[in-house]
Length: 163
Image (cartoon, rainbow, N blue to C red; front, side, top):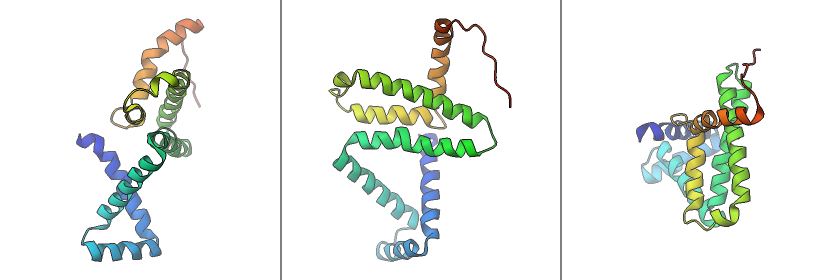
């Protein structure tokens, strides 16, 4: 469980550092710290959790799943494109292929899937597991499906691109 939580801890630490860099927000954090005797990390995490629950209550699980399935991976994809490393580019391209397939299938069977209890929560867990650095389910799904796609397309050998 710790390995699953570790990236969340990293994001929360980055968010806390970024918020503390803003003088106005730092002032509010200091006021909250003195009033509650909590550290800024806990305050930022608590505010984030309250915002997440509020979004869920107001907009529903679909809004949360859009953030987890589209916004977070989009951010990481841009970072991957701007980096010199190519393995992260390949990972995020694989993610988007698998994501597109899942969204297409979901749109076809939405009338059925929407009736499943906790469907949006399960979808959130699926999308996080597709891109989570310790699970990377997108790569696993892609490797499982690739032989069938190659056979259907009549491709016997795949050549790797070089720069």
